[in-house]
Length: 341
Figure 1 (tube, rainbow, N blue to C red):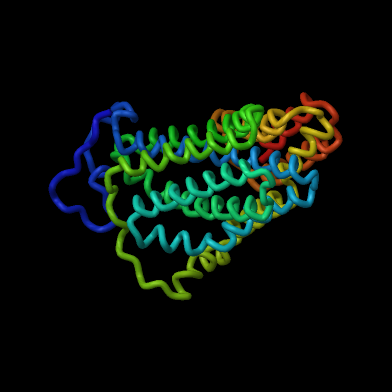
Figure 2: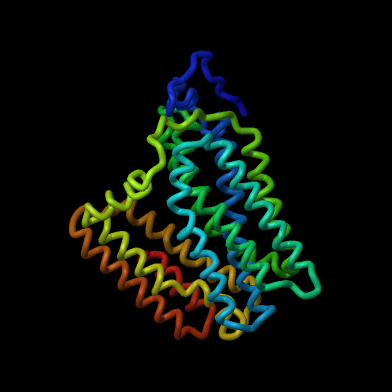
């Protein structure tokens, strides 16, 4: 991979030498070393996170046989973004983003390694699993805004559109493959599965250590209540954005059946952990199909009606999944859930 060298002149705050580099628009993306390294971190970390979501659910259900304990996993994952969403935005906007990304992956690596060690114990601690999942999700909360900020700074503007498309496609592919991989590898036991997740996060850590500095964020005002609440005020004043976000929040809160996948896979569909992984991958496959349809037939009018229709389709498909007794129908229903979403 050929690294793009930054010019010797000092870039202004908030600007990146790489993004200002002049290159041929047809330049292959993976010849840009900074993009290749960021791409590796994205694929490795997202695949590890998706694997972890399946492994933890199946492991906890295997240890407890309790639907309540499965629900508490979701609670631990929900609390981390709730607590760190605002601080994450402030930190990403004010500190060296490469350094923050390294810290995120270091924390994710330690939490994944911790899960592997807990699983290796004769009597794994459920409380420790919850705590480590919370820590892992906290790191994930910081990673999301970091990726959005780093991508434009790691490729020249001439190839930015292609880089964004490749980056998004990589995420969708990881969401599709990661859960199934986690379920299939569970045949070797939870320790091995957690170990693979840890190795993937370690690959992301190594990639960040090889990344060049994309530049520092633009100067920001001092942290105050005003700056902390600025994003919330912006959303509150725009009814369309507020309504869409509340709609999505309600759909995610009341319409998600993912926490039940271990129960359905083992007790109803009578498959193994691989079945839980396939169930978790199915909505991502449906979403990819939906995205492909929308690229050919974009929605140009009556967006609100389409929004309600998508919500209705997802709801009906979720009900079908709830009554399903076969793996094929369950996977099909979940694909329709992803399509509607």
